Length: 214
Image 1 (cartoon, rainbow, N blue to C red):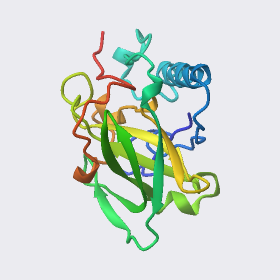
Image 2 (cartoon, one colour):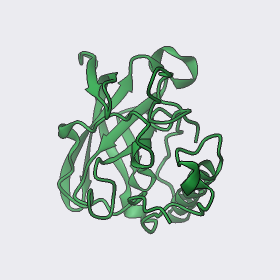
Image 3 (cartoon, helix red, strand yellow):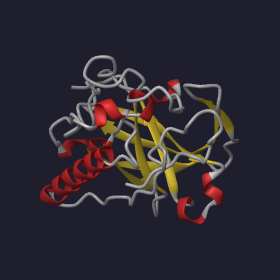
Image 4 (tube, rainbow, N blue to C red):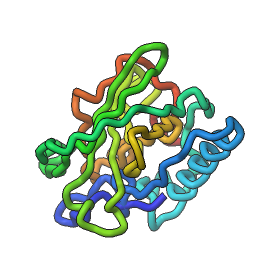
């Protein structure tokens, strides 16, 4: 999992020292249950390794030195969703607020329509205007969301999912790969605030839970 939100090294750091909110992630095709579980365990292992590494970890040293693992919900393949994806080519760029004074220039790249926990849902999926100019991030898409677990078992401010531009009119969203913004671990980071339109009025019991330091 590569990292680095855009390169903003002024007085604040971005949501990831080297992209996590803006990461290149290969879109996963819904395969067999065993393949999907392997992908989830691989994601968890990779994220834990990133948090242990002093070069990539958002954790302050006092937390990182004893870090073993993040707290994850048990893998659940029912949260690997194949959504209808509708492009929004006429959407205009806008400034997404962050946890600091910095603004993140985004555009709604498309809208995902899907069924989750028995009801029809939809989420906006964003593309960052600066990253789309860079070859290696040209296909990167950003999905922030909030749900009814926030403030209870998950981070109050919501979570993020990394995606890539899909081929065709569907996109796979694996909520097991939902992760916390870096500011959930360290207040020196500047992280995009989830737009209210991306509120899921249901519990998403998948992905990373709230961080509780040892």
